[in-house]
Image (cartoon, rainbow, N blue to C red):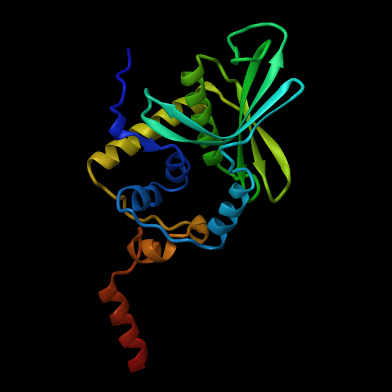
Length: 229
């Protein structure tokens, strides 16, 4: 049986998305405790405020909607908040349904995560949503096959299937995060086009510290050479 992580060693679930985007970004935020807002993070905060309501718990017909639901996985050692979890009433029980206190029937569980922009070319958002599903499965003793990412820019949901490969990648990322944190190691920068979107770009300085970047001394020498011409 897999060992349970000690409660004081839990990582933020949202860090999985940070790590998938850039391990250095995750380390700057979660190891070095650095953070800086930009237009994109501010817009993201505004979108999440629309659904951030821990008191919201509404049932309409065969659907129950809960917002800002606390999540935890003792096996992975992660904690977080689900923007929204939807429960849909079913007529028959299965491994994909749960019984809810005070409510008749059997209920499918579906996490929904809100994002400010549009679908990404990579899997970082899907990984975060899959981690939420893993937490819900552990908490409720249920199997969750899919969830949704709602993108504010395009105003629609994108369905995410929680495949075995996606689940393995979530566990692998958490293991890498734990190893990096234990070593207090921040990876070197690797400048890519997505660096321009990062709120930490001025703190990270990927063009200076990344692969192929010039040293400060080399830069000064080149500047002096230009001035002498």
